[in-house]
Length: 198
Ligand SMILES: NC(=O)c1ccc[n+]([C@@H]2O[C@H](COP(=O)([O-])OP(=O)(O)OC[C@H]3O[C@@H](n4cnc5c(N)ncnc54)[C@H](OP(=O)(O)O)[C@@H]3O)[C@@H](O)[C@H]2O)c1
Figure (cartoon, rainbow, N blue to C red):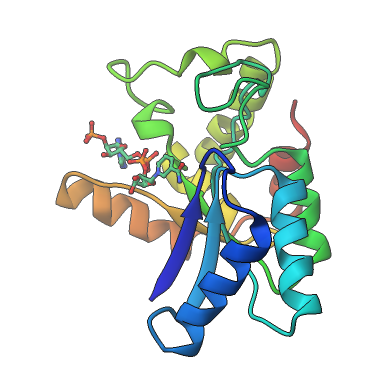
């Protein structure tokens, strides 16, 4: 079982959290430690504290991540300085630099917004990079005969960093479509185009 630290208002010293989580691993309650909605500096600090004490640290990061990228500067009650809940540039670089880490990508299909009129993109995706980035999975879907959702999931699954899409489904048809993404092999050229559009 994975144990997650999710968000929070940081009233507990990190040393205390690190020791408490390690204790749960030691007693067998948790097998794997994960973290969500935290600044990368806090994740790295917690992992450094754990390593220095010879304790298990976070290995799984759970953040919202899809092919389209949101603005990260929109304040909210939980994140007054802008979103820490999305996989931003710091997280993606950290993931490549630390092979022990895996990203669990929440909302990879943006709740269906790639393909559904009834699911508009969230407001933080309303920026000039979105149309350019959205065009590429649509092109790759035409080239491969796959659906746009499958292209997005295949792109996450086979990239340079380990990513596990946490895709939701509310029908068997959606589940089957999404699961079939594991069979879609993207070419290096398609990956370059998907990675590079902004
Ligand atoms: N840690 C965090 O901060 C965080 C943040 C966000 C989400 N999460 C978690 O991540 C998990 C997934 O989030 P999510 O539900 O937003 O994921 P998602 O995969 O982006 O969206 C799933 C929804 O998209 C629609 N959908 C799925 N497959 C489809 C398809 N093939 N074609 C058309 N529409 C399709 C369905 O909506 P309909 O039901 O309307 O058909 C489905 O319920 C959840 O367990 C959530 O709790 C965690």
